[in-house]
Length: 96
Length: 315
Image (cartoon, rainbow over all chains, first blue to last red):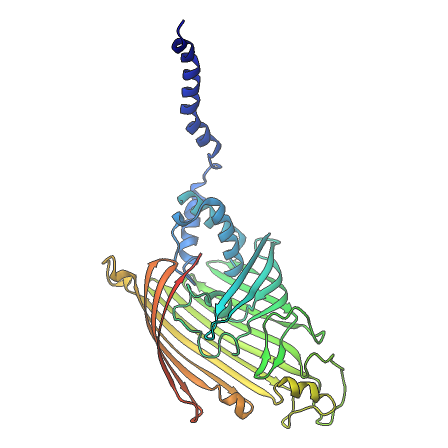
């Protein structure tokens, strides 16, 4: 058996693992089950509250982790009720 | 729980750089409607100081007359707050109740700048109540009460009778109202603050204890400070979809700062008019141009007219 034919199984394994990697990452990043009702509430709350002092910021501006911090800060600054800030977070993280 | 802080780095006209801790606070979310805050926090009085002063949010370049440092607007305090929002039907009520170390007396009146130590064991109490009958309409009312040491860092001697009959603790009270309308391309605001310092006595000075105070240049007379402004901003996106023109914003602001008490205080009386044109590259990046006219109401002080430009970016 040639060296090349011996390498085929190894190449096949490496190729398979490489092909599966994006899928495994995608599965690991799968968000918690999305609640469309909460997303809709969040979109409305975002439009109603997040432009009261500064311009509305696009959901694409920040990552999920950044939105967690930013919305928590705004919950204090704008005195947002907790349920409203959770809805806004859900909307922003679903939309970025 | 959230910990947040802001550092201000400023270069003065003399080229010197100063660094200040604007605030450093911990926020603990107790319930959906109650947040406990402790640390050094921006004063919850009114709207401008806590929400509108950052340069990428302030539609103009300078502060309104009487707001910012050395004005009526309290800057920051060290203490605790309870705050939050309570929805009632389609409306929202907000509150922020604060207790802190309170103000100290400066040359031009009480200064509320987040002093780490309380120099008179009397806490400032105050806060703001807000009401949003509609998402784009907000009304607020603020109040603050505190005692102020009338001599520099001298421990307060309660009930001490002095020659002038004035107490070593003066009374400081502030109240204010504010309003905001933010719908579509419009941003319209109004804010009024009124504060009084009483108990210093008309004659000023406190014999027996005044030496330190006089050397420190502290205010020695009662005082009354009023400041208000009204502002309207309109984003051209309301009348055009053209991709460049829609990012322009017109701003007009008018306000007054009216201190009363002695001749030196009254030199600060001014009316201030600003008209500006802003260009928003992104929601948080803006190039501002502004014409500012300051009319000082004491004849000997010349009026000022200046053009200003500023680029601001918000993180």
